Image (tube, rainbow, N blue to C red; front, side):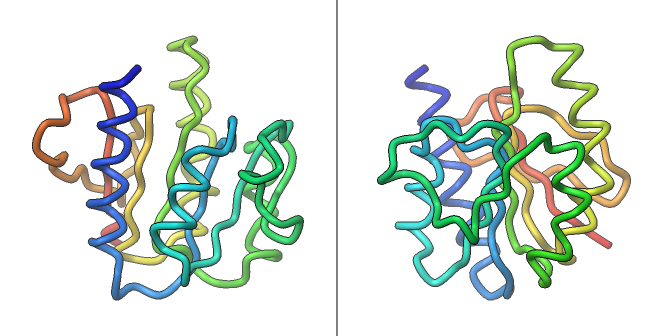
Length: 157
C-alpha cells in the first residue's frame, strides 16, 4: 500500500507540474476517503476540482463542496458533465479500480469516450487502471514508479 501511495503521489506531482500552464479544472474520478482529492486541492489551490463518486462517504473535511461533487455511476455522470463543468479539464485522476480485473478493464473502456470529451488537448490522465484510447499517449512514469503500478497519459488530439 505504501508503494502504491508513493507512486500515486509522484505521478500527481509530475502531472500537476506538466499542466501548470494549461487552463481548466481538474477531475477526480473516485473520491474514496478523500485523501487524493484533499492532496490535489492543497497542491493546486487555484484549480477547481470536480469529483465524480457513486456513493460519497469521505470525511467531511475531505469532501468537495456540493457544486463540485458529481454523484452517480461514472458511466452516466461523465456523459452529463459537460453541461455542468463547461470548460475542458487539464488533468483527470482516475482511482477507479475495484480489484476485479475484467470489471475494471471494461469500466475503463466504457468511460474513455466520455472522459476524453471532458479533456483539453495536452491534458494529463492518471489512473490506477490502464486505458487504451486512440488519442491518448502513454507518458513516462516518474523515477521510482514501477510499470503497471500507475498509468499516465496525455491527450494528443
